[in-house]
Amino acid sequence: MKVGVIGIGRWGTKVAREYIALMNEGIIDSIILCDTDSSRLKQFIDVTTTNKLDDVIRRVDGIHICTPNSTHYEIAKKALELGVHVLVEKPMTTDHNQAYELTELAASENLILQVGHIYRFANAIRKIRELYENNYFGKVYYFNLAWTHLMPCIEGVDILWDLLPHPLDILNFITRKWPVEFIGIGRAFRRSKLNEVASLQAIFDNGTFASIHLSWLSPIRRRVLEVVGSKRVALVECAKQEIKIYEGCEERMLKVEVNNTIRDEVLNFINAIRTGKSTFNSSIIGLRNVEMVERAINSLR
Image 1: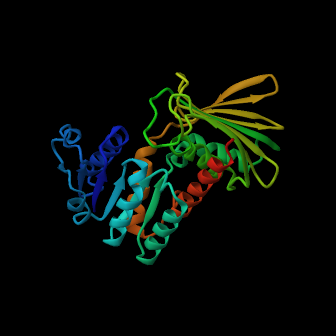
Image 2: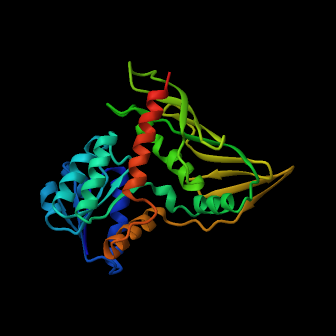
């Protein structure tokens, strides 16, 4: 199997190294790396590199798209039209009509189209879903999620498109539900428009709600999930994959085997190409996530 990685920025570099490791292990045959900025490719000396997208698409079985959000649709569409399987980083697109189009195109061509909702592959999040489904928390009253870090504004990008896909996907993965309503407030401080900070209430049809806070202004990097239930509370450091359980006045760490989420996501993509079956992060999940982000943005005051 031959795979191409499109976009070798900060995240694309991490993704590329996982594919290179799999190639060295004999799990895939070869890899091609592509970026319009040739300087980003110089660090990779033992693999094929190019700055021309068409060179990659015509030579591989699947591509992993790690480019800016605004380019996802055009690159994915071109690959699918040429019979190439696609794993595209979140969000799938920034328009639900484009997401529908890609989903229908992949289905009509019998191709794999997956979206990079990486936390579905984290053992800590999978453990929380297992506990949730086994009523470990009792009646779940609400969820708290905080996704914050200090960074410059991304030109032309609302913070909800950058950060909200992860909290929404984690909530869906755990509860198997999507919010039916959003109530929120967002603000831009360092520019005239497009939010840099947002606070949302995501309301579910069973009465449960989730408070979600997003910020590009806080110097404290948070990737935190809190599950508050009648029996127990869990505090999850999502990136570190640490779970602390609170029961009454007692607290304890829950043992979780920290896994390499990028590798597991990539292996899932490779397996999907080989079997024709897509699990965990299908295009339908990606499409619904895009719809939810749009609804959340429209809810902001």
